[in-house]
Image (cartoon, rainbow, N blue to C red; front, top):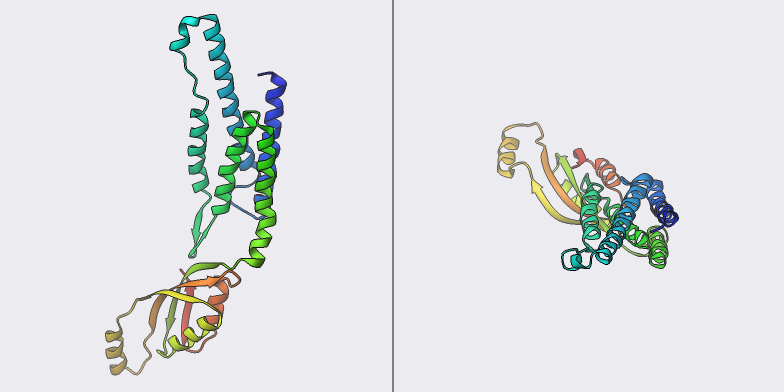
Amino acid sequence: MQEYEILIRLVIAIAVGGLIGYERQLTNRPAGFRTHILVCVGAAVVSMIQIETIEQTKEMILLNPVLANSLKADIGRMGAQVITGVGFLGAGTIIREKGLVKGLTTAASVWVVACIGLAVGLGMYFITVAATVGVFASLVILKKVEDKFIDKVQAIDIDIEYIDKEFTKKMQKYFNMKNITVTNIKFINNDNNLDEVAATKEEAVNIRSIYTLEVPKYITGTRVVQDLCRKKGVVQVKLV
């Protein structure tokens, strides 16, 4: 492989990784501009190493035909290791925060950038351009389509502490009004003990529960907490 061709492929890898990484950077994702460039360039380098290895193997066999049965070059082995290895890098971009899983799209973009980098290194320019356009369109254009037309829900956990037992009815009414689904309820306190304490003391007894909710995408967990905090009889509400 000629030196100028190596440089061209490296420049293309930088441009492709930078384009996709820039979009991730604008949305404040864990893996951004530089990370995507490094992944793409690294994958391209691996592909070019594979090509050089094959060329060297061919030259050695031509010079020494006796070595034909002993020298082998597997063009797919190193590429397969890149795809597997970048999976761990992608996993590092996935985080769970306050009941929400974030970073799956960024993890996928890191993985696909590695695949495109392999194509760049192998000199498959049409595949490179087509894949880059497709990925960029998916991240930018389809994101807008998804936000506008596709209904999604997010799972959150909220820790609620309240005094009035009738508050559960008010809370369920709020959930129904907001199209929020309750998938699980974990009661922290024992109801029997609460009844005994309440019967012997005049002071109010706090009841605490953890609710797992499926919330529409247009409602944030913080908004749910704020709305419930305004309800009468609530002591405390927080995201888990």
